[in-house]
Amino acid sequence: MTVSYRQPGVVLTDHRFSVPLDHDDPAGESIELFAREAVASEKAHQDLPWLVYLQGGPGFGANRFVGKQAWLGRALKEFRVLLLDQRGTGHSTPANRQTLPLRGGPRAQADYLTHFRADSIVRDCEAIRPGLTGGDPWTVLGQSFGGFCTVNYLSTAPEGLRAALITGGLPALDAHADDVYRAAYPRIERKVAAHYARYPQDVERARQIAEYLVRHEPVLPGGYRLTVEAFQSLGILLGGSEGSHRLHYLLEEAFVRTPQGQALSDAFQEEVQGLLSYAGHPLYALVHEAIYGQDDRPTAWSAERVRAEFPQFDAAKTLTDDGPLLFTGESVHPWMFDTDPALRPLRETAEELASRTDWRPLYDPARLAANKVPVAAAVYHDDMYVDTEHALRTARTIGGLRTWVTDEFEHDGVRAGGPRVLDRLLALTRDEV
Image 1 (cartoon, rainbow, N blue to C red):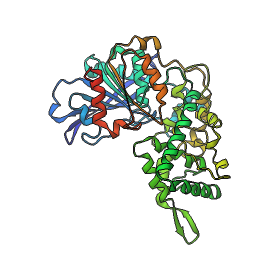
Image 2: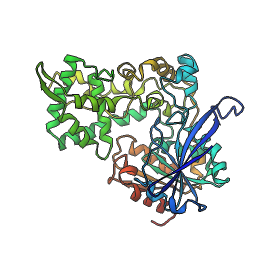
Image 3: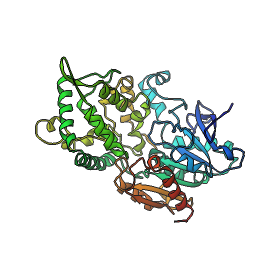
Image 4: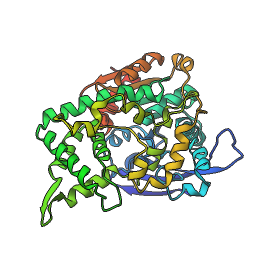
């Protein structure tokens, strides 16, 4: 049963679909997918082409827009839009500490989660597309990890695509997770240096907070253990368009004076809890490194191992000298499954995934080279999350792909620059630029 309702200027319809857990076993277990259709009110009864949006992550449900926010308003001028909660996220059979024990123990949970990568998400799209479009191909808009899914789509089911739009999401086709993080840490260091150049007062503030955490080892109100390494991971903010400013305002409200002396403010603790907790998107932590698994090598906590090659990120070393404390970025570490109460029950499951070696290839270079689907990709000049060099190397291997390389936006450009970004990419697919 579908349910339709209205927001300002938009008609929304909720859809639920049943798809195989394992598309290679269509008669086996099924899971439920949720997607929200959006169409401009004045076009609700028109026969419009479809655009399906694949969210970044992994592990995040589709955006919950109000009306015609961000890029959606531009898309609704010509498309009927499907906002898909990818499997395991949002309302699509969510995978978390509450639901995964239904699968059994850690090994069974890990086996289940092998079906939650880009290849399965694309096959979900192909399973539901004919019933929505009448069999017509649709346009896909893939943001970040959604772009990884889009490149898999071009590799495995290009016949389902009218056009492909990618924002900050061109993956390295054959890189191991180690290669990804070995390229990431220098980018993160540049972002931290730029932040401290903008807000030099934050150098001392960050050190003071780190020193306080070493002495007190606080537990946040929601149960999160705020270690120095966890504090450093707030650097994930620096990859967004407003992230440096958000981090600065967070740091400046860290302390208050109390009858017992200086303490972390309630406001700081509350915001940090929200930024660091994976309670709303645990799948991100569980399968983040698995999205790079394609060969016979385990990911084996790649970000943690590779970090040891960059001793400047070692907080203990930093606090013994006068250097600035370096924040880290988009990476998942084993200690997160100790500090975060939303992840603690899943530690063994994460270990199982980190040790797996049977990952399937996600991309087909030969098929990508022969691509005939119009493709346009926004590549951000110094993207903290997706390496620009890796992205451009991939762009050169996909037949007919047109890139827009820009330093006007950070990784969240499709949100910050919404209509303009979508306009530019659509024009590129139509040879209008």
